[in-house]
Structures are given as C-alpha cells and as structure tokens.
Image (cartoon, rainbow, N blue to C red; front, side, top):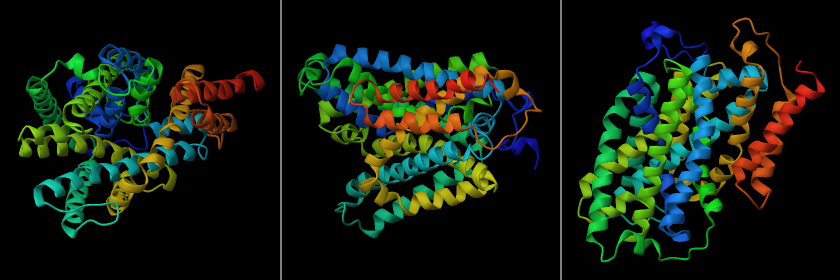
Length: 416
C-alpha cells in the first residue's frame, strides 16, 4: 500500500504525510458537529438564563479546550494514534482497556447518530409512525443507507474524512446559523427574555459540567486526527479553537431550538421555518461528520485489540452499529453517557504519562511491556469517582483521581 493511501494505524505519521492547517481545522470542526450536544444545549437553556448560559459555555469551553488541546499537541508531536500512545503508557495488553472503552463508546454513538437521522426524517418525509416499540421498514432502510455511506467514508480513511468535512462544515455552519437567526427574528420576545423562561435550576458549574460532558468522550480521540498536523503547537491551537467554536455552536443550536421550537434539534427549528429539505441536509451532514470520525476511531481501537486492519474493523463496527442503531437510540443513550465519564481518565493518564516520560514515549526504541497496572487502576478508580461522586464536575473528578493514582507510580517505583 502506498503511503499516499496509508492511515499509519500501526506507526507514526511521517512529516511528509502531514496535512494542511485548514484541512485539520475542517476535520476537527466536523468532529464537533455532534447532534447529541444539542440535547445538552436544551438542558442548559432550561436551567440557565442567557448570561449563565454564556458563562457556562466559556468555563466549560476552557476546561474542554485544555483537555483536548493537550491531547491534540501530543498526537501531533508523537504522530501516534490514541491506541499507539496507549500502548506506550498502558502497555501492550493494558492498551486494550482504553481501546475497548473508546471503541464501544464511539460505535454506540455511531449507531445512535444513524437513528437520530433516520427517525425524524422518516416521520416527516414519509409520515411514518415511529415509537420505541416499532418502526416501519422504510425507517430501517434509511438507517441502512446512512450506515453504508458513513461507514464507507471512514473505510477510505483520512482523505475521505477530509472531503466530507470540507463539504459539511461550511454548509452546516451557514445554514444552521441562518435558521437560528430566522427563528429569533420570528419570535415575539428577545433572546434574553426567551432564556429567562424555564426552571432555571442549574448552577454555572453544573452547566459547565454539561458543556464538558457533551463532547469529552469524543475529544479523547483527538490524537487520531491531530497526528496529521504539522506541529504540536499548531495542533493544540486548532483543536482548542475548533472545539470551542464547533461545540458552542451545537450547544447554541440546541438551546435556541428549545426556547423557540420546544425541541432540542436544529432540525425542528428548520421544519417550523418551512425549510424541510435544508433541514434534512443540515441534519444529515451534521451527523455524518461526527459519525465517520467515530467509526474511524472505533476501527483503530479494534485494530489494536485484534491485530486486524483498521479497514476491516471499520466494516465490522459499521455493520454492528448500523444493525443495532434503532435499539441503541431507544435503549442505550443513558449507558453511553455513563461510558462518556469513563474516557476522561484515559485521556488524562495519556497526558500525564506523556509529559512525565516524553523522551521514552517518543523513542523509536522504547521497550515494550505488558501492562501498567497504575494506569489501569487509575482508569477504573477515576471512572467510579466520576460516576458516583455527587458534587463537582464528573469528568474533572474522574481525571483528578486517575492522574493521582497513575502519578503515584513515579513515587512508588521512582519512575521505573
């Protein structure tokens, strides 16, 4: 296979195969165009007034940016995937834990994304009655077609992801923003007044936690894409900017959808504005940009565990995600949110491990080892704390415990 078509799933990306800054920006923006983030936007609009919403966006964006920006820097400087980095921090077999976690989570969200497209379109376009207990065959056909297309773009690798992102990012950003502006102009009250309605029972800290949680699991996969950046500094800047802009835009779309259309998706706003076909385009491309990155990440993770190629694992995971899509949508979202809180401990251990042992991790001659039990224990304890500690920001709590447990290795073992 020529290097031109090679995704470097088993090795670092050489300098001559790095991508342009614009390409990386488009890929990362597309990755953050995650429709499920709009659900968080709805919760933010219900629980916060307008100033609180903006403060939560900023605080959550800073936390998310620091986390993903660090991973972005590491991915570019090392040229390694998340899974190859995990091998150097968790060990050859130890890396199976983060690879399994990221693969299950991203494959799950891939399936949910397919249903998030097919179900509303089937209802509106075909007038189908879709419930948790039944969906006509036409809806399943839409899921199948969407699954094939999105799996195909991930199968062909970073070049295909780039093409999709260049098409989708401008269209989603422009059409979505126009729809939001039209919705605000069509209302009887100002944006600030609309935000004043609702329960308003969220603190800014809790709101920031929703902002972070909306994409922290996907953000853990950042090295898979920034390894194609020209430098660590550029990757960090592009990651922080694109994640803040893209995630904030999705949260804003969800919030405006909630207060003006009573839903949680830009699709509903555009339907209210009689923009059905534009709504289908925006919803489809919005989900596509995230789903192809998600299943690409799943393919890399499963390839690390099984030893099979990334392409073959993309096909397998795409098939599973497509077949299970409707069931996942109705039954698994809560479980996926629990899994979301288990991934930040993985990311923070990679960050701490990299900066504490950077020279060895970057070395081509780093000695292989089987399992780093401090890293494994850090992930397990961090995930437990993130899910069960009732105060603070769950992902931050989990990261703090995970980093503490992992770092204790250097005190107990004196860095060995």
